[in-house]
Length: 126
Image 1 (cartoon, one colour):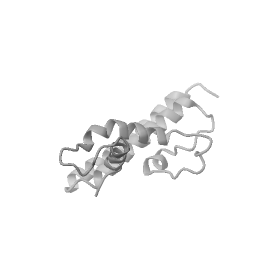
Image 2: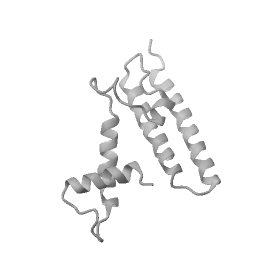
Image 3: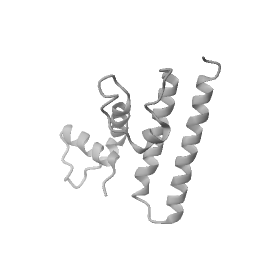
Image 4: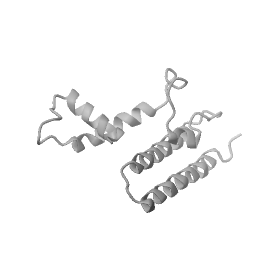
């Protein structure tokens, strides 16, 4: 199964005029651009905040819940959501149960880290 990163990297390469079917084509060279594009799409905007489908990571960190509208909280939650989603994406590429267990543990640790980071970001604020 093709990953989201690979799919976006291939689309970017194609839009830049590269032939993805060419033998020498290396979609991996476009991964930084793909990650940047996916990150930008996750940034909340007034237009897409209510319409955007939430990823597993967004749901796990409750990305849309920020009553204080604190920008640090948004950054923490969106960065953590991306890490959780990367782990989820990696699960489809893994064969062994040990790797799946480790990815699940990583996702849980990211969730916990986000909770503490949000608590620190909002400490002392009304």
